[in-house]
Image (cartoon, rainbow, N blue to C red):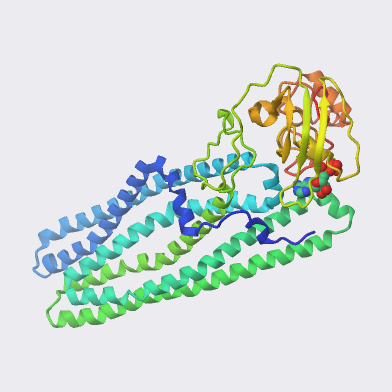
Length: 531
Ligand SMILES: Nc1ncnc2c1ncn2[C@@H]1O[C@H](COP(=O)(O)OP(=O)(O)O)[C@@H](O)[C@H]1O
Ligand SMILES: [Mg+2]
């Protein structure tokens, strides 16, 4: 099994910076503007409530207790309870809205990614490892969801909490408040340093996970080859090596996170120590009341979570940013075989792919003639991208409707390539392929592909019923046609195992052959279709 090289998947595009990539995905937040505003409002209200509770404590100590005014105790206690309940309610509202909104955002990006992958030409899929695509569509999108649902909100609310609390501390005692604020400043350089190192590790681990997914997918899809050629041991060794790489990088990442979080734990707790000592001195010097000191310490304790949480937030933001970068690497790949003059194939991708090389403008659409299908190859040449030699040179064919052409040639002589030029799975390098006099590049892709049927030598079974697989290219086919196709493909056994009764389209195929992606089974040829 070939070793997996991450460089394979990163050569075709200009890299976007991770944070810039995350910013480019902001369009997905727009439909949830109202929810975002309510979420932020709820989060900020909760923070305001939390900050107000120590101020109530101060009033209790300096007012009700210091002056023996018991009448104040009940209303102040009730106010504290009310604030506590309000904080809990606000947090509940935030979580409730957030979980729905971020799941929708993830779904929207995933749908667009899938639609974009469908628009990309087969040569793109040839050059990308399937595991890399899979990991981008799953783990990377989850990282973006986690940041949108957690990191983004707490980044804003924690910074605001920090500013508000330090402002209140300064208000309670200006010099003690300033000292407290200043003692926190080492957090900034620590965060910057961590962010730089974590960015590299987080990208590395995400790429390595993609490579690992590729190996697992290949081992599952190629299990027959592995077993038949006795290469299971080598494949397992390749898997272990890649899994060990992922593990090493994860451990390195965890070690970095561990030391960073330890520092973030240390700083606020050290600050509390300083505040207690200096606060006691301030009370002794009568520049702070006892209630003020209690409020001061309680407020300073409220700085512990925002500072500690910066570790999670930066890590989550960094993972989301590299995930966005990896996802945009796909979105930024422009489809080469396009149909831009025809509305049905126009992309619905909301992430705007950056404008890159201008695309060849295909002359305006002409409707295909309702003729029976005369296929002409007019001095066709074709080269695969990056290949030194063309595969096809000056091919001239004129096939009348109903005519059968048998092409024979050595393996690698270009028979399959020639076939791909008709439904535009690849576009000619020069010359043209014409269907009833119209260049196939001038036909709407959807209509062209509906008119041309292809049966490839490498068969793929989709996770669907046998009938759905057989009628993949012709969903309206009747029972006789399905039976005929199964007979032609020597696949009547599919109807004999109780897996599929004729006429039922919904019965799933229970045999291992159709149990998942990558299943292989001789694909039935489709009678009555060309190619
Ligand atoms: N995706 C590809 N990228 C680059 N070269 C390819 C690709 N597919 C096929 N080729 C090359 O094009 C030539 C023709 O391949 P193909 O059309 O599959 O031949 P045939 O079907 O006659 O066996 C071969 O030399 C093959 O190596
Ligand atoms: Mg072939």
